[in-house]
Image: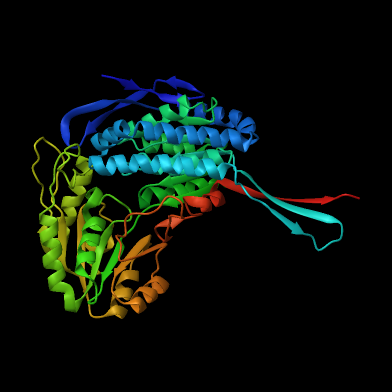
Length: 478
């Protein structure tokens, strides 16, 4: 069985412990063993990144662009191999896994272009004969902590801008899904990243993550993960006055109006709620449906959900793969019981059998739910969606906004007025009209409001706000 090491200062290093990477579609399939770092190895990685920073920060933008472009090209060349790894370790269908891998390549190639387009400002001074220039400079050593549900796309949208803007990186992927991240690290290393510019430290969050957050030489932390961990990270990082970017959770509403085209609305809700096994922070977990169309919508959506083929992520016929882990499946099933106990009618949601032993669950609809139920307020992160009735548009928007989260929202409607008003009134960072709440482009900002996000937006040109700092220079020629 292969043993996969950490990458520190350009050298592959064994961990002090190791994890076993298991395929959730087939529990007999051990993908490999992956090193787990301790605090000492995190310290080594941070010191390597600190030592490599001056040369990388002052390198020609073309050098950084060439590295990122080479990484993007290499990912595309290996998309099928990486996609297969992703599907095996996370449970995402092979089609979705390869698509995510291609997205990672696109992100690297986008930021290859951004590396040579770092802009500044020349501003006229209010004083005579003085020039003012505003430039962007790298923040320094950045710690990147990523989740298990998008194990190559989210690392890509953090690593690529960090390197493009001249920072050096210490990267901690999710302990549950290290395989895709390790393959990405190999590509970055082989593409010629100088020693220390990019470092991989795999392992447990309480060990590796905490060591990164508390390290005095780490100047910024970008984290995507659970709400409790993100909130504690913010408190801990504040002690070191670090720059912090958090993407945490969502309880995203999809409003379906009486005038919606159900040929659009039902597939959009099916995709948003159940594709990727509902394991997306942008998933449509609250379906808020106007009363006049409620029964017909429930009938059509439940029929479509029941028709989904659940099975091994590597099987081309599979439309919904397994839940990623035993603990996540247990959590999902507990919310099925909670929804039923709260008075909702539960359609589906029970465990399912596959060709092999795995963590399979049928999609669950919590019909006749109300917005004050726990199952409608707490993020489940699985194939579960509450269906909530609204009397009219005003009640629908009020229900949609009645949540501690504010990541994504959507509306299905044939009314331009309703679409326009929803876009204006929705308290979410990303708003979709006649589209699933899940599914975003790589060149535009990603992020939310309220309890979902903190700090600058991710992706696109807006990434510069987090990965750079601004310097203002004055010059008097005499």
